[in-house]
Amino acid sequence: MQAKHKRSIHSGREFNRYFDLSRLQRSDPVLLNRGDVFDTILEMARIVKNTLPDTKGIAPVLKGSTLEQTCHNIFDFVYSHIQYTLDKPGVEQLRRPLRSWADRAAGVDCDCYSIFISSILSNLGIEHYFRMTKYQGDWQHIYVVVPMKPGKAPGARHTYYTIDCVVDSFDHEVPFSQKHDKKMSQLQYLNGLGSVTPGFGAEFIGFGNSALSGYLGATDAAVGLYADFLGRLKLHLQNTLTQLKANPKAMPKGVLLRPQLESLLRVWDDAPSRDALLDKLEREEASISTLSGLGELGGLFSSIKKGIQNATSWVGDKVSTAAKSVASTTTKVVKAVGTGVQNAAAWTGDKAGDAWSGVKQAAEWTFDKVVQLNPLTVLMRNGLLLAFKINLFRMAERLGYGYWSESEAVSKGLEVNEYRKLKAKLDDVHKLWRGLQGDEDSLKKNILQGWNHGTQKHGGVRSLGEAATAATTTAATPLIVKIVDWLKSVDWGRLFSMVKGAKPDTDFAAANNVPAGFVLPASEQEYLANQQQYAQYTTSPTAPKPESGGDSTALILGGLLVAGLLLASSGGSKK
Image 1 (tube, one colour):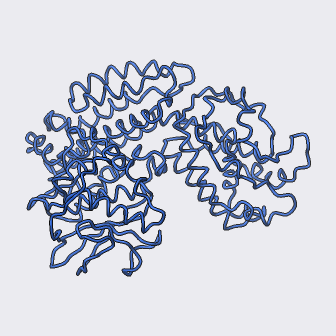
Image 2: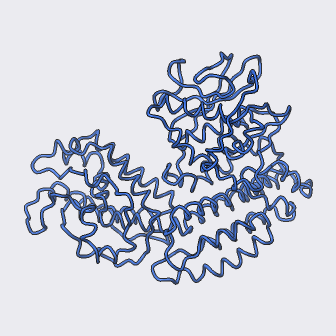
């Protein structure tokens, strides 16, 4: 299906500030030979996930007061600012949103419209689907549909909105003979961060499960996977740099991560220069871990270096330097692979399969290590652990109940439906933590320590147990805001409504709002030296002093520790 006429579009200059086109260096559309349309839709989903920061700026501008208004705003914006042009016969051009914005005067096809629209909806956390349709025998068109009720798949026509910028009206759907819907799952960065840090950590989702094998031959699939591996690594470093620019004070003094990343990204596409610089950065970071309070901050660059070496060993002399230096998720993968496979014609199918698996395993090891050892995620973990340990915003005081089994919760008098909601929120926190490559025993220990301080209504904390000097970061604050927001969905009064005798304090109004500009303590020592400054965020406003005694809450909650919940120290190198 095609647009009926060429439209007159607005210049859009006033919106250019929302699109950082500098990220488009060496970035071209992904070119797919027209073939299996299901490969195309998988690749579209991958592009949305890997380039979500492209529309981070414009998404809130288009948010309306209702779901319908938001969808209408998105349609109007895309329709009025991006021209429609049919792709050349035989070739499918899939553009990331930034490329579509750069090419808006020349025009894009329906698939690029859909990627752009899906990216905005994903940034806004709105559930939606890609819909492919047939009209006269073949799959001819793709657009976006948005269920009116989240959690309900599009059913009858009155249950969803359509955003199809090939047609001239919002929510207009041309009758079709057949359809196929693909749900765009809620993107969960770092396996749980959601939209807290858009793009950061999402770079590795779906690696090895994309449509590469659908349009690459068996012998060159490993080369294409290798190119994808390098592209995702580069994107993660770019997104880390974006976070550092947004949080200038995120890194402690002495950690020069930002200039190091800038230097590495400048030479990333030149493999010899990149590898030489990684050698230098590996030597530099060896001294980082010796700096007071920075713990495991060393290891990012050495892990990248080792991962690239391991992946390269599987393709080695089978690919050209040009193919190995592919470094953007929107590079012409097919063209690069075509170059690299000139020396791979002798591969047998079995060897190619071994190489594909080898590259995949090396890449997945690297992705895990990069997230675990990225100084930004290290400091995020430290910040969250401290926040739970001191019961900041009374998060641990509330989450701790979720460690009871359902039978225990009921026996203690907790209302079961609200308990299940709380348990789901605790699961979300653990999911977020796993995404940060953190040790879950350590998380549990710190939540329970904060829970103990909160439920026993300590007016202050004389000691936090084992001394720790790990540095934290302001970059953890958005995670804290998100967790506090999750906890607002629990009806705390109802949760404790069936508890006999004195009930825990459920006045969390003060704890439900993280003030603008709130600064997390830089360490446990800083917190202990300035407890009064944080008291309003860590204790109940009506908390009695410890010596008042007679608090039956201790009896209600004491079974938690008796039940034998783990309070052991964290294991391994993760925190």
